[in-house]
Length: 202
Image 1 (cartoon, rainbow, N blue to C red):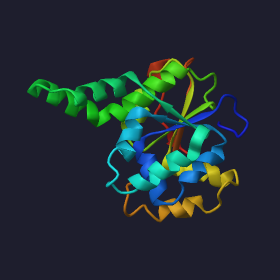
Image 2: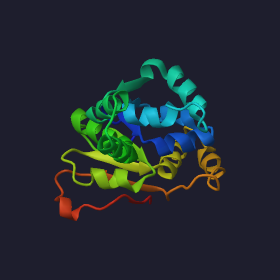
Image 3: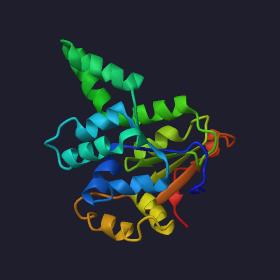
């Protein structure tokens, strides 16, 4: 299980948790994990690419305020999407771009953590709301911890970072769907067929 003293720690969030944390006024709780915050290109574009979207301006200001606490990462997925967007496209390429955009954030997360190669499951924490994220990590060959937004806020509350985090997140649950508090550790020594998706927190 993750602990405050984990080595080479990072936290990587998909777009869903960032939007929900922004809505609940909890973005700064990500710093409570005492980890470098990684923003992969596709996720960053999803949350701040259009500043007219809800909470995009707040997230953009938060990212700017992170300074060196944030690590912005380019991915092959992101570069590919950017290249397709920048040129004239055939109808087939338009269809490819539309398809790529549907899950490019999740794919970029998976690509980055795979290249980074965490040494322990507690070293890299991936926050998600979309089940596709958890599914993408089931067959990886490196250790990683997966947790939903509810599991994240429950953890920071338990660690004493923000005792009100759970209540703050629940206050936006009518506006945003929230998965239960699920957490899972991927152990590469366990055969892929025996691995399970994240389970409810104890």
